[in-house]
Image 1 (cartoon, rainbow, N blue to C red):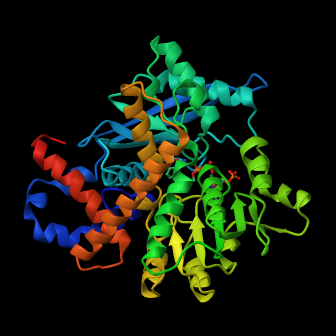
Image 2 (cartoon, rainbow, N blue to C red):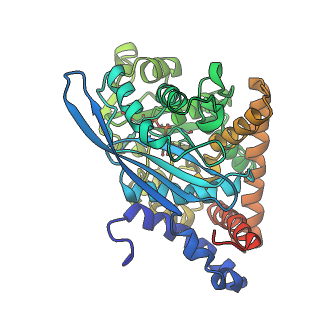
Image 3 (cartoon, rainbow, N blue to C red):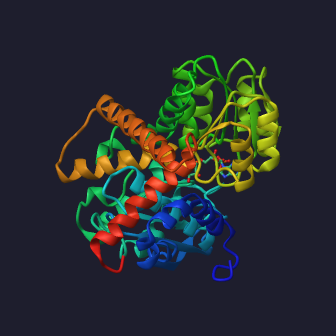
Length: 435
Ligand code: NDP
């Protein structure tokens, strides 16, 4: 805390990992001797740059752009770009740090990175987003490349932004390096199933976890926060497996219908029309809209899928979920639960699918997309989906077995942290180099 003042999100992410891996460090003094942990908590490189752009009225605006190239022990830096006013060094260091462990857990040859801007896409015209993306890429293009650093999407960066960023990169570099950015549309090098992969992957992981307690999604009441890329496809897969999704949210508030929400309306509003979730009740007056997104956790449910942002479940929300009988939490967002909330879930025997494992489906399909480019392959949607299911089952198994091997059976968060850490640590030691 002394070395990283004003970095609460980063400190929280590191603390969560360190308290899991203490038994590993005690058992293997070589990790301390070779300063593996000291290296892991420092990003290899943090790039900060100015992003000037012109709004529709002709005014020049300036935002901050970032790329955090966190750790490349296993492969090129790989991780999302986030455009949101809350983006700062602490948020990006937390995102980069967790990405390193997550990417190692997938067993794919990818290191960890992240980036973005404090640019707020809310209320911006299409032309403004385009001009911002062009200016952002004018600088970012110097730092990325298919074998160096491969950004993808995150909050505020979807297929539209990736299209603008990729077009600008191609123009600046004069080459068609399809795998320099992922989450592209299928027509220009994207992969079938990538858009759905994070959301579907969460549900596949949670289904495995439920199976272990002889439960499933079928007929379960589910509450999902957010209504963006991750939330929409988590809802789609949960509904397909028989769940009743009764509530979801956006930054303005949440909608609730105990009979089940209509996903096609949510998708139309949020994915295609860029509207607020409150408009749902115009099409479905039987549902209710409540202002403010945090109240969503007071709705009784069997399974909660936080898919919006970090720290959206605090101890108050966790207590409400527990007293309403929640059985499982599937973390779709990165670090959606505070440490106090996690402790409450564990004390009350609530299953937790930890985010580093549960939301690793997106980056896993991204790694498949990179491999596909290098071999000029095209995979069908069904092939990608069946690979994704296999990957999520493998990740679940790894977390479960690791938690058992370290005397914390069923604590998949400890399992995910230890398994991911071991892969990065062993890669650092095997290479006997500075990273
Ligand atoms: P999107 O931008 O597509 O969607 C984010 C959703 O969360 C929107 O509905 C947004 O509301 C809502 N939201 C954002 N901030 C807040 C807030 N402070 N309070 C309440 N609601 C909020 O992002 P993604 O779906 O891509 O990402 C969601 C989470 O999943 C993030 O934590 C991200 O890091 C994580 N993730 C994403 C992956 C991916 O493949 N995209 C991969 C792995 C993790 P509004 O529409 O009003 O802005």
